[in-house]
Image (cartoon, rainbow, N blue to C red; front, side, top):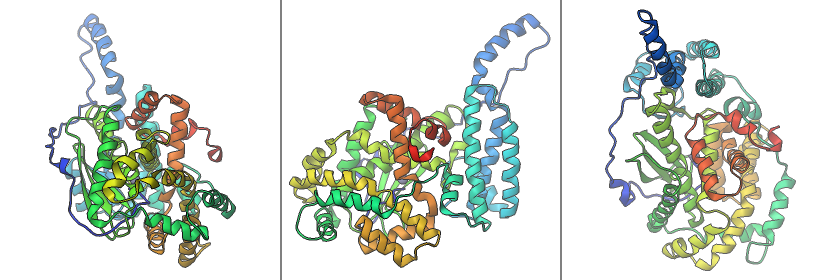
Length: 475
Ligand SMILES: [Zn+2]
């Protein structure tokens, strides 16, 4: 989902290319559970077969113990979903597993106990090669996240920072008001107009509001540009597709509901004004190379190619979300490297939205400075959820420090109330991904795309991502 976005009521409209047929029927995952057992009667033949088996068994042996544990994990997440409506962000495994979770609704205490036993067995499970060790580590991190969420569901009151650390695997940074005031001073020199910065920012934002009947006119070219750039660098599974619907009255700006079989439903919340300068960032985030691509590649590479069923479920409150939101936000800078986004918006976007193309460059400069204001969501959510600021004080603080309208600030608070420390995954996640890509790929654009695609196709291990960076405040 995207925490920041905006707009207002339309429903059910969809982009034209949603009609491309899905070319893939559901493919049964390849079994990784079978291991040749024909040793004994002829040792010479057995020796030859053993060599063949070993060659095949890099992934097969790895799955021997982890497969059943992965299924238990999926069933556990589905069972928690019966208590926590937001827990299961996506599920496309066997329908009978979900039905079973519904039929045998287990208590949180029982689920907590099961999760503990599963963690114990996972720690002892065989991992005879690097691949299975990676699989086990990723599953272990996810399970640790799940157990922290279970503790909260059972009534544990965790401070914001501890909750973020236990669920998402990161220690969110703290920024004081002076940090944001320093950004305001830079904005003061860039934002056009006369008078106090707050008034100028309000007037400036209004210049980019897209009339309601033109929202699809900006969303459609934006997602096409994001998709075209992504397809030039990442081979996507045949038949991948998405549809977009405009919705209202949600605590988020937009949401990708992954359906399996490489299909996404992208909902855009249009209850608040929709700004043209958000269109491309939003479509990169929810679509290409963001959530839709991540989910499609995980399904293709891990579920269908390897039979790793744990990836048929995506628990929202888990460390996978740090990678998901971080890569989704980072994708925009791959599609539009450097300052190329404002030229594209000037030529392709603002004319169809009825916005003065001459504003594109200054909009870009303001966006760049606004990036650091993205950390304000973490500081605002922490202060509110830890009880250091009231709801009204938090709304006032967001209005003062992020230039949000009252309605935007109220929706942000609603987001914190609903998803709690989930806000750490956006700005911080993007910085982690950027520093990881910088480290492993340098500045070459093709190498950056390649490293990014590799990140999206691998088991999400957040501790590795953090270790691969030089982000000082995570040390
Ligand atoms: Zn998102």
